[in-house]
Structures are given as structure tokens and as C-alpha cells.
Length: 232
Image (tube, rainbow, N blue to C red; front, side, top):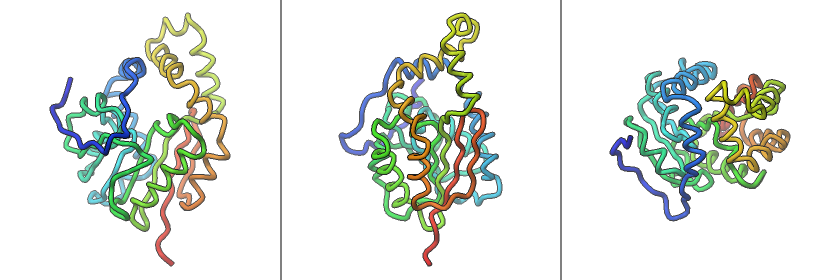
């Protein structure tokens, strides 16, 4: 259902979403389940102790469940960026939305406090080039002392087990979420596999300029938080 909200479009470099991927994404978990997942992640990052006046941007925000999670935690200066206007149209909250490319953020220099991405960087087509471009833009937009939060798939033993399960038709029939996940992976196969095969390159890009505040590998995910240093 469309929220009726207007969104700002950044130039003509955007692309339509993948209807088949988006349909599988909608089957994978409900918005309520997704918000609960994001709440758990953000609490593990320690955001409960942060000032509620921080300016926060969610990249690859999709239908806005992460924005809803931030809002439930008391944050109110929220913005979301995604290439899919269709997904953005499903968001009904108060955050400002942009249809745009994370590699070319049309936001002012040193203007935001936190930039977060949860499950979007593995869609980047070229590694490490696209990741370098994205992280450079994040660096530019963050204020000194600002933070980048990243949650992405990671090739842990648990993820290998999940991949094994997605290749079993009987298990997919028994589990609609597993079937949806298998469909999503199939639609993003090239970028997904490329991402999982480049852990050293990815961490090198993230840590080139940012100081690592925390890094956790568990349940098939990388949860990394970095800080832009203050001027010397």
C-alpha cells in the first residue's frame, strides 16, 4: 500500500527495482518482524545511549523498517535513501526519503551524524570500486566523530548451513521464509557471491579511514561500527 508520501529524486541515475526480488523480500518477513530485527541490531550497537538529536541516514532503506526502528528508539531526525521508488512508497513514517544512488549522495559535506546500511552493500556490482565510492561519500557527508554502521551477509559456518538449506526443495516447501530467501539470493546471485568472496577487500575499505569501534561476526552477518576521527 502506498503511503502517499512524496520523495526527492536525485537526478536521473536511479534504476527501477527488481519486482521479483521485491516480491520475495515481501514474503521473507513481515514489516513487524523486520522492525523487531532492526531493533535488536541497533540495541547491540549501543544506540540506546546516544543523543536522540543525532541526524541519521539509512542507506538502502527499502520499505523503511529500519527507519521505524530508529523512530521507536526515540530518534526523530531521520532520512532514508534507496534506488527503488516502489519500496520507498511503502513507508508511512515521518522520515525524509530520497530516491538515489548511495555512491552519489546529494547531501552536504559534514552534515550528518550517523549513516547506517543494513543489507544493501552486497548489491553493489563492482568490488571494491563501488564500495570505495560509497564509503567515500559516507565519509564526506559525516561530521567529524560521526559513525558508520554496517550489517551485511558474511561467510560464516552458519551462513553456509543456510545456503545448504536453500538448495533443498523439501525444506523450501516447509519454510516460506527459506523459500523467499532462496529466491532473493537467486535474483542477486552475482553480487551476493562476489561480496561473500571478498572479506579482506571489504574490511580494508571500511577501515581505511574509519576507526573501528566494534566488529562482530555471528549468524551469517558482519556487524561493524566505525567512527570518522576528529581533527587532530
